[in-house]
Structure formats: structure tokens, C-alpha cells
Image (tube, rainbow, N blue to C red; front, side, top):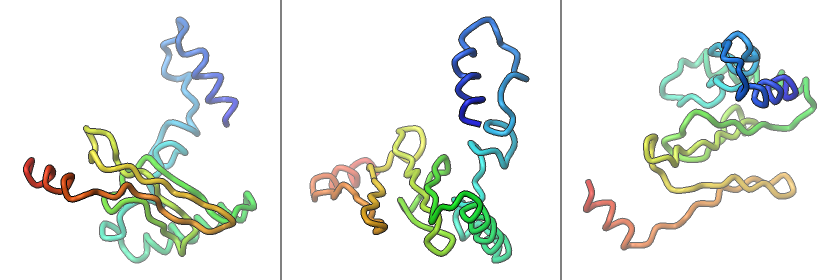
Amino acid sequence: MDKEVSLWMKCSGEDSNDETDIPFIATRGYDSVVWCGLYSQDPAERTHRSLMLSSVVAEQKLKTVGAKGMVVGHTPQIRGVNCKCDGKVWCVDVGMSYGVLYSRPEVLDIVNDRPRVLKKQRDSCDELEVLDYL
């Protein structure tokens, strides 16, 4: 899949404007690799069945590729970097862009299988500036 998407990206600047050349598995459909939000949706917006399904699917995918966990993005997390599916899926998109959530940077740091989230601490001046704009 990487090779297919890379080739498409390299050739997309040429005369080919045919959208059918876009690799389907990577970029189209609600469950494509790029757009799938199965693991990163807010639990408050989902049913219990949906949450259980995402955990089962994550477990199957991780077992298939021999991984302990996965890191996903592309669905902004209002509460910041967090983990789901019994700690097997880390959601890291915090929506830093001005047009999304304009949130402060956060980094998932995993050393020796120990995850931690690094956040920029705001000082009192930053908080006052935020209040002034609200």
C-alpha cells in the first residue's frame, strides 16, 4: 500500500488528473486507512456496542501485524492525546491548526514500553490572554 500511494503522489503532479488513479484502499471510503475514525471517536458520541466493536477490531489488527499497540491521528481529540481500546490505541491528533482547535502541542513519548504525554505548560500570562479573547 505504501508503494502504491507513494507512486500515486509522485505521478500526481504530471498530466494525470484522473481521480480514479487515487489508490482506493488508502484514501477513499469511510473506512480507508486515511479516513477511518473507528478508534478515535469520542466515547460520548458512541454506543457501548460500537466501543466494544472497535476494541475487538483493534485487537484483531494488532494480532495480525504482531504489534502491541497503534497510534492514530486525523480525528482531533478535544481532551488532548489519549488512549482507547484498553490502552492499545493512542489518539494523538490534538487539532493544533488555527482552523481546527488551535490547541497547544502535545507529544506521545514511548520509552521502554512506557507511554507518557508531554504537554506545554501554560503560565498565568497565557491563561489571562486566553480569557481576554473569550
